[in-house]
Amino acid sequence: MVPEFIDGKINLKGSSDSVIVRGLFYLVYYAYNEETPETIINNPLSFFEEIGLSNHLGQSRSNGLNSLRKKITSIATELSNK
Image (cartoon, rainbow, N blue to C red; front, top):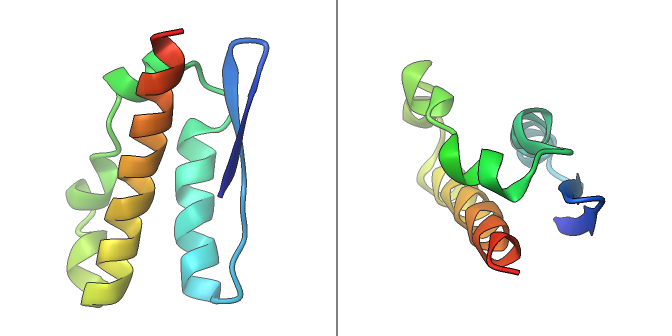
């Protein structure tokens, strides 16, 4: 994932060779792309738990998804402090 900060909003770019990982990234992309850092910080991605997606992922995929969410939140927090 490569974030860009343009006009006060975070733009996400990313891909993967794995179809599952690419799909998970797209879900995060759909929710957070072109949002302000404050919006990302104030709206954590809880829908994964709400729909039970995490229960259907293997440990490795679930860890990767959590890492992606933490990374985006960290980037948003860093940018909101500027």
